[in-house]
Image (cartoon, one colour):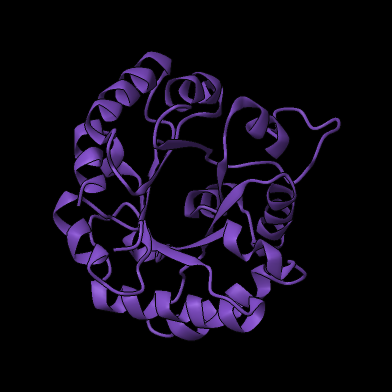
Length: 240
């Protein structure tokens, strides 16, 4: 079976001590795991998270990055800073960034270009606004978010489908419908790049539903938010 991408987005849930204790608990359980496990803590804790994980099978990622490489931009966190701290992955365009901070696809594309040029693997979240015509929406949005991106970067891009009706609601999309949505991501990226990118799902995933998603052919992994707050629960999902 191919490796799955299992990503924990710890959001603003944990302080420094909690984050490091969470990681230590996780590492005790997943030390032999063969999946691509990614943990995205607060940017403030990436350096220490990396020190804990650098000789393990767990990668550290950022939850976001700036549209700017450097300069007079107070409060911004650059992709280069994330990389220097030890992150090898970054989440871009998460639904909360779009909804709360008014990010659009133009902003997401700028961030993607910067992240890729710095060698980061980018988890690019699609807006997932349409509940009915999601296949056409995905095709159009993926094309918009890959405009001008060199095909050589395809292996460094992971598209995450996050339907807005499933974010934080406790109601996830049906696995077979998610499978068809992610199949469209792969069809479109193959048309654009000549090869398909990875495609993962995020939206009210928990321990009870995760196995059903991972059984589907086109689902390469999961982006997990609230259910990752408990390290033992996240570890069990990684072990599926």
